Image (cartoon, rainbow, N blue to C red; front, side, top):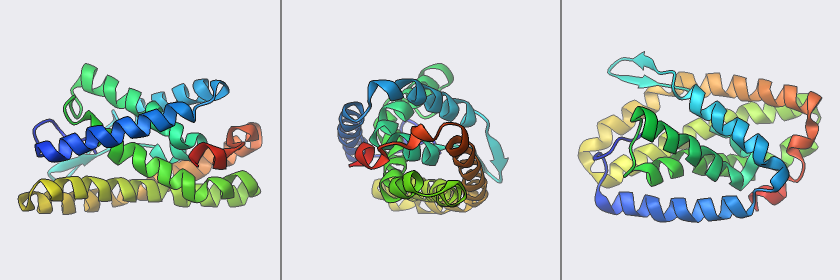
Length: 205
């Protein structure tokens, strides 16, 4: 899901930087001290999960877990996922530094949207219902991420439209897997540490 250096036009890259800076500023403002350790854990979860690439045809896919980050952190998913993306770019060359802003927006943006749409339901629902909503959120986050990647590619040029379609088709299995994993993670968290989901509405508004 990482867009590589040189793939996007300069206006798209610049727009990504502006949006990412805005998201990071809002995310840092919405990150309370008590959730910093949780943000670190979710950043590490994203970092490790997205290192495991599975080849599908001419492309490859990987887990992201941005839906879970959005459901737990809200806007604070922006700095958490940004750190993971930065470390991957520096140490492994995934994505790149010039497209770091765009990659942050296409991965953290859907996380925040899912938190905004479903955070209240996760917070106020019993465990099983919360897990179902979380599963929907996990799948939706990946679907939105593929859509955002496709938009970034399409804005760069029509020649990228086939690649944009391939990105979505290749990630259909990932949508299902992330839905199941996110639902299971929230089911467990609601049982052992329900305070993780306290004030989710405040974290995304």
